[in-house]
Image (cartoon, rainbow, N blue to C red; front, side):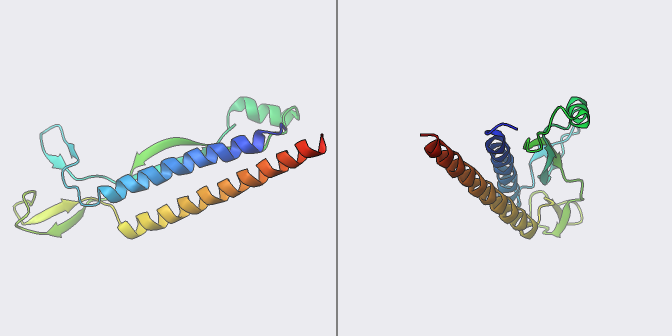
Length: 151
């Protein structure tokens, strides 16, 4: 295990959490967007909520083989974003016959974004980001102390 492995793990987590916060911000910004994408038949669809999927780094066959053979003891390899998926939940139907996107019954398909759920996700991502900043600063101060000992 190298001395910079924990810094690399924290840096990858910071990058992943920042992307997660960007996706949540995009979801909140489009919470009222009824014309986000157009289907093949020319119909507009509302914005569909997006979610981020994480995976630990080093999940390849080679890394598992090296760990099993004892040649690798790296446990802190960080995290990576594997996918940004659209939430398959149905759109929220809201009765508003005066809306330009209302159907014949007067209902408007609204995005499947729940602002409360997004705020909880944003707070979780923010706390994870702060925890990784704290871990990175602690590791940096330990490395600085080690350099002072070496003088």
